[in-house]
Amino acid sequence: MLTLRLSRIGKKKQPTYRLIVSEKARDPWGKALEILGDYNPRTKKATFNIEQIKHWISKGAQSSATVWNILLGMGLVEGKKMKMVAMPKPKAVAATETKAEAPKA
Image (cartoon, rainbow, N blue to C red; front, top):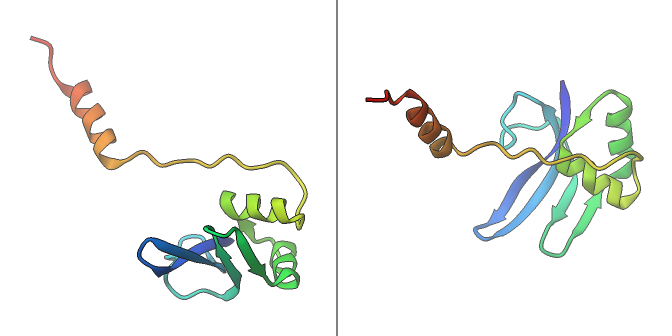
């Protein structure tokens, strides 16, 4: 499945992102099918190729929650905001597993 998502570029502590089209299972820093624009979160400036975004969405490409919310803010798509889903940290998961496995004496 194709997805529109952000790929981080830029220097340390100065992030900028590229909006790319790639396979969902592929690494976001790997090879992308097409670069659709860039986004600077510090200045909230986005320069996107609007025609190409609409083209990929019409072909069935899904977007990540962050990209969807940015496109909503720009007025390119209609709908509701998506909730961002945060993945649990590996240490927190490991700590809860060890507590659950500990036998009661």
